[in-house]
Length: 111
View 1 (cartoon, rainbow, N blue to C red):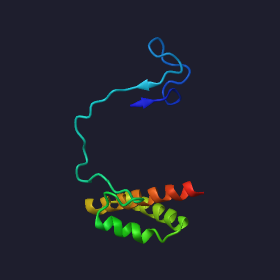
View 2: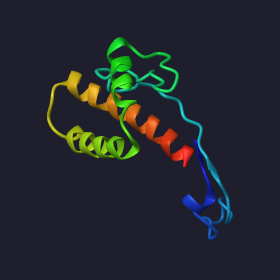
View 3: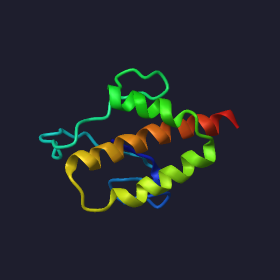
C-alpha cells in the first residue's frame, strides 16, 4: 500500500526515522478476507463482460435514463444500502450502485 506524504506525515515527517516529505509504503499479506456472503462484482456495465442475466437486464433498463435520473437513483440506493435486509437484497443494491456509478462516470467523461 502506498500513502503519499501529504496524507502521511507531510513536510514535518516523524524524526528520526521518517524525514519530511516521505511517502509511506506498506507491504501487507492478506491472511483472510471476511464477507464471503457477498460475491465480488465482476460486471462491466460498459462492455457487459462478466454480467449475469439480471445485471444485463438492469443495464439495458437504465441505459434509457438521463444523467439526472441516474444521479437520483444512486442517491436513493445509497439511502437504502445501510438498512437491515437480507444478504441477497443487499448484494443486489450494491451491484446496482456499481453499475450506475460506472455509467455515471461515463456521463461525466462526456461533459
